Length: 140
Image (cartoon, rainbow, N blue to C red; front, side, top):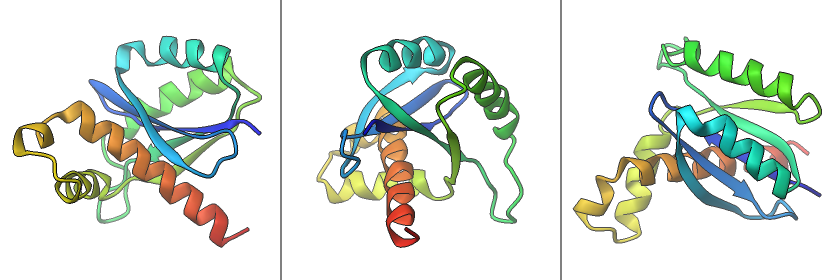
């Protein structure tokens, strides 16, 4: 089994999370500059078996896509062209930043640490991945 990799795609930074090879546990991996995201993924995929990629789907409360979708779609198209054998799925990312901040508070992080936007992005990617895994288990 390969890993499932999740991306919380942002204009400046993108959070990355992955499962273990048995796809049981979701872990934050890192945050990378979005301009370096494809290079990072190419390097990671060369070293680790990636079975599927999950992308946070940016939706507003009225269920319409947020403006960031205009940035995400070209990235996804480029990824699919480069890796046609790796399926890409979207997962609704509404409230992931709020949940990430709550997780940081519950985890006892100090206010200064909670202001680390890169850490928020990584935790958000982990929440997106956990959401995908929970839905997969519920509907399998």
